[in-house]
Each structure stands twice: as C-alpha cells, then as structure tokens.
Length: 257
Image 1 (tube, rainbow, N blue to C red):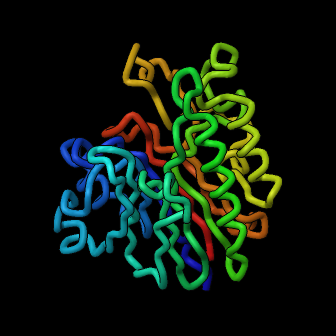
Image 2: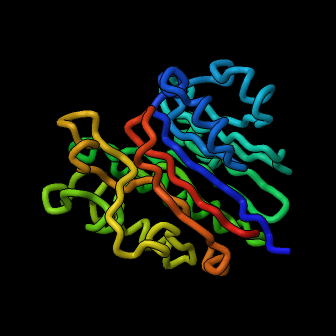
Image 3: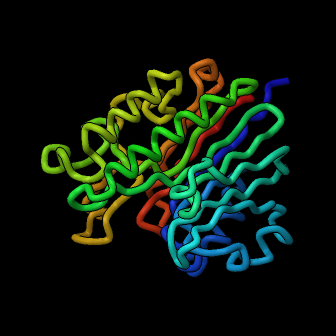
C-alpha cells in the first residue's frame, strides 16, 4: 500500500491572540495538518485554548521569549515527539524564543523564527551570528533526516519578492542574508516550494500597509527545506495565500516518509 504523506504546515501568526480572534481554531479544524509549526506567537502556553488538545488532539510545545509579547515559536503535533530541544545553546538567542527542534521516529523537525535584520540593518550582525549557530547545530543531527521550516526573514532570489530592485541591500534582501540560504542549499537542503514550482511567483508575507496583499506586493520568506535525499518523497509544497489572520500566509509540505 502507498504511504500516506505527512502533512506539515508552518505559519507566522504575528501574535496568536489576534490569530485566535480571526478564526485560527476553525482553520485548524478544517485543515488538520499532522504537525503545525508557528512563529511569532508573542505569548506563553496559557494563551492557547484547551480546545487545541481536547477537541483536536494536538500536543503543544513552545519556546517563548523572556520579553513579554515578543517572538516565540510553537509546534502543535498529533504525534508526541521522542524529544524536544528548545535552545540553540547561545544565551542571547535563546532568551528570544526562536527555536524548537522535535525528534520523531523517522525525522527531526526544526521550527525557527529567524531574526529580522531591521531598518538600517542594525541587527544584521546579530542575524548572521544566529544563522551560523543554527547551521552548526542542525548539521550535528545525522541519524535521520532534518526538515527545516519557519520564517527565515529573507527572500532568497529576485523571484521571491515583488520589488527586488527597490529592496536591494534592505533588510531581508541583503547579499549576506541571501547567501545564508544559498549556503543552506549547498549544504544539502532543498527549498521545497521552489523545487516544485521553479518559475511560480507566490508570496508568503504582505505588509499591512498600502494594500500590499490586494496588489500582490509581497515577499516569500517562509520556507520548508528538506534534505536532498528526500527529493523524491516530496508530494506537494504550497503557499496558502488566501488564508487570512496574519500578515503572513501558511506554507505547507506533504511528504511521504
């Protein structure tokens, strides 16, 4: 019998409280991913309603920032992981709640909210240090495939944002940030959406300003990466840009493991 693909979703909700008010639970009941990775939750565990487990059967794991209302990542999964790692191992990054790695029977899943390099690139050095620590850690796990997801806060190529020329050297499209994605691919990971849709113009983030979503003026900064050896296992890779509730859109991966 064919293996039923595992359905993985990732979504920067830009505040789980607001997303809950905009129908998050109804969306989750309808879509029913096997695993849902969230970024920028801006909350502790007590903000998540009991229905997440009682009605939908999801187990919740999260890493929140020391600073209230800032950053934070979470994973909702129908299958309990074998192990959860919620730290990169560098204090200045770990205080911001940006990283979760879950070990399952056949794979690791790494959910990350990468730093924004900020206007005038005041946090570019911080982000580059974070990127280096991230790459160093994920390369340590060699016993099973490591699937990477999250808000990477970078558009890799010109096709990945609506106005590349105007944003050259701006936060999220600097040569340094783009080189990190190139290095990730060189280290053996595949950008799943671009693998299946090499010429498709789709975006996962739209500014709330200037009617950007209605005008389709966005950036593709949310990703799923899988090791090259899983290329044949990828069944679909999508951006759900009709889903509202955040300035980001959910991204999805169906993979037969």
